Image (cartoon, rainbow, N blue to C red):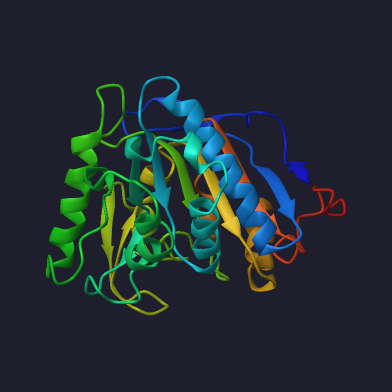
Length: 280
């Protein structure tokens, strides 16, 4: 069920890196009975969205996230009956964050995505942009700079701040409200650089790379994908007006649309201003 959290645009706006004001989208909540139904709905919408993008003559771009629901979504996309409608060779893939470990580590979001998604679709390897691993670039600061440079190399003249305007950027949400590797009260939340190193993260592994808050909001559509009762309070706070320093999930917003895909458990503590009809 769709739960609108307001009108098509929020009142006011935000400033981009060049000081120009941008309108901020008001989020829409899409609630599903189970993680599996959530994943199927995301997969169907993603294929439709990317077909629309490619019909304009340009490639589609997707920023991937990690975590348990991402794994289910990746499988649903790879197994979608509609996947053949899309030219996967013209889909560009990025990652919102990565654990700074070896390339073959099971902790890497990239490795997770390869097993469930990348190796199962006819993607163009040149359009897959994983974040550097610790065995490729041992210096974590250099690794962050390298990924920022890769982003800049794919930006178009009409893009702002040397960052491509992504079509769909997916984000999971931690029980503490973190998104990507931006954790509550951490210095990375204040960063203006496109990609930064995170040391001493409050959950293992401690060293990570992450897109920063301005970069996470350089997408036409931001999709939060959240499942599980352990995420319900974070969802409540993020949609209930919490500040992004305390609840980073309150920060990212799409330039055109912000969607929250929730299963029933994750939606169990939605703010009072949102009606919770029964899921179909």
